[in-house]
Each structure stands twice: as C-alpha cells, then as structure tokens.
Image 1 (spheres, chains in turn brown, yellow, cyan, blue):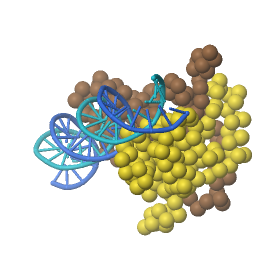
Image 2: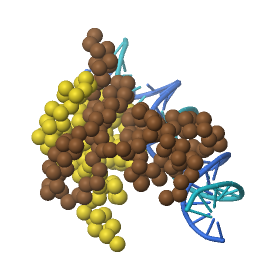
Image 3: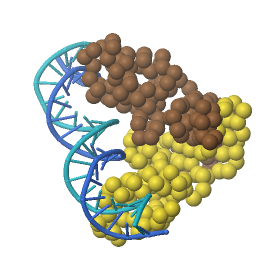
Image 4: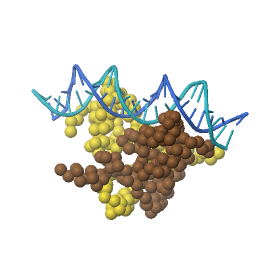
Length: 128
Length: 128
DNA sequence: GTACGTGCAAATGATTTGCGTTAAG
DNA sequence: CTTAACGCAAATCATTTGCACGTAC
C-alpha cells in the first residue's frame, strides 16, 4: 500500500471524527491542511480505503457517509435529523452469524445493521 | 391516499418482483404498461410509498433499490455481483431490539441488517 | 371544484473519467 | 525507474425541481 499525504490526512480526519462525515465534509476538512487536494482524490481514497477494509460507508438519505473501521459496530439513525449513534455488541454479531450459517451458502464477511427511529430530541418534538 | 394508475403499476411490479429493482428498472418495467409515465413520477411515487411504509429502500453501491415491505426481513448481499438474498428471522429481530432497549434513548421503529460477503458463485470464482 | 398527481425539460448534486503531471517505493 | 496517485476539468448518472396540465375524490 502506497501512503501519500492525502491518504494520510483523510484517514487522520476520519479517525478523529466522532461524526460520520460526508465526502463534502471530508474534502473541506482536509483542504485546511492540503489546500490543493481535489475532490477526485478524496473519492479515490475513500474507495481505496473501503476496498482495504480500513473505512466503512453508510448511506443516509442518498448521501454517503464514512467512518474508520475500528471494530464492527452498528448504527442507530434518527429518521428526522439523521443523527447517527454507534452501537456495538459482539453477542448480537455472533447471534446473527450463527443463525445465518447453515441457512445459506453465502460467505458472510461483514455485518451491517441499521436501526431506524427517532432520537430523544426528535421524539420529544413529535409529541404534538 | 389517492390511488393512481401509475402508483398502482409501480406497486404491482414491485410486489411481483423477487429481485430488488432499481429506479431505472422500475421505470422500464412500468413503461411497458403506461408508456407515457415519466421518471419523476416513478421517483415521486417511490418516495410516497416509502413514507407510507409500503415500500422499503436498500442502497447498494450507491444505487437505490426497492421492494415491497411485506414483512421485516434482512439482506445478504454479494460484494462482487450485488445479488441480494432475503433473510428473515423473528428471533434475530427480537434479540437485537431487546439488546438495544435500555442501552439508548432512541425510539427504534425499524431494523435493517445487511450481511455482506460472497455468494456461492462468486466465492467459487475467487479461488484462484 | 380543488388539491394532489403527472409529464416534461431543465437544474442540481454526487460521483466518475480522461489525461497530463507528480511523487512514493 | 516505474507505477500508482494526483489535480483539474469535463462528463456522466441519479435525483430534484418548476411549471402547465390532468384527474381522483
């Protein structure tokens, strides 16, 4: 793997970010450090990092958002404000994988669970 | 709810389709019956049907795909060929929901799990 | 009759591509 | 050196929007 400044800064930004930034947000952030970086480079690198299982992508309302793949975890997403909360449970993963094995011939490599609903704030607001 | 021919045909096509067609595919199929239908109408109706929990959307490699919301089920997706297999398990849903309740204040309304890996065919091919 | 849905064409936004240049290993 | 990565601009693709007209209720 060839390591470039651009790749490093993207990864650096992603690993420090608790949010799940979009391509646009990543581009703007990295631009602070590498003013000449292009969007194509951001796209290329995100694709590269995903292929190498370093970064993970979630699609929320048609927008791609990214995060570093630290450990397998899942997302709890607010339907209204798009806020994402991370959620991790090894037992849930194991439960799911055990269940699937035998039922299908797919070779499962990765699980991605999204739970959709309302966050505390939006739930409070919607009681009219 | 106002029911139109366009809406009916889209729904009709989706409920007969075992695949998970994209907007483009839905448009082409419905065009056979309603030759004057526009893409905007397809988009509008899909959005409408999702809002009313009649249709569900999955995003695979940046492309939106749709299916009728018969029962809550999950997807097993091939990373290579994008083939989608449906997978249903009430006990898995229950396990996940029970686990989350208490850990977070989100009000979960819907669960969506995607399992990524290789289908039988692609797995066989990749043994080089 | 009226609000909502439709078809069309143009606009927008995200992502990809082609290509000449640059830099990592 | 050589190959992968970069930056830029143009191209493509999915989706949205504005608007005049049509139709379900």
